[in-house]
Each structure stands twice: as structure tokens, then as C-alpha cells.
Length: 72
Image 1 (tube, one colour):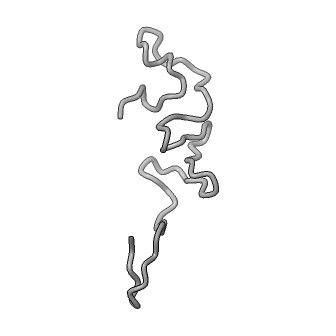
Image 2 (cartoon, rainbow, N blue to C red; image 1 turned 180 degrees about the horizontal axis):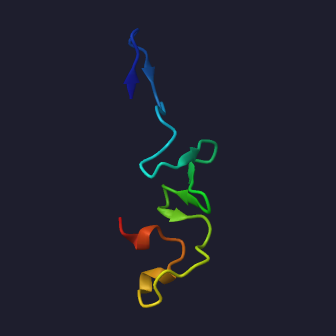
């Protein structure tokens, strides 16, 4: 929450549309457009499957909706 000079409260103020990854949030849908895919921060998952399996010997690679192999 942010207070302005007059003391009024402003809720849900977005000072910067870019997030820590540098990608922009699509405000109408509350998702982050990351170039090739769209990420839902509430679910912690991508909305589309990754078309490429990074490491066939790592089982986390087969979860094609995860972000950074589920390394939170």
C-alpha cells in the first residue's frame, strides 16, 4: 500500500511493469509474457508446454510447464 501526500491510500499500484526477470506483466490477465510462453505467477506454471526437453536424464525436464526445472 502506498500513501500519497494528502494521505489517500492507493492500492494495487504498479510502479514498474517489468518484474525481476525483466519481462512485462499483461495487466488484464495477471500473467507475465516471457517471449515464447506466458507464465502464471499464481499457479507458478507456464500456460503453454515447453516444446523442447532440456535434459533427458533429469526427470524435472519432463514437466514441460515448470519454470527453471521447478527450482523455486
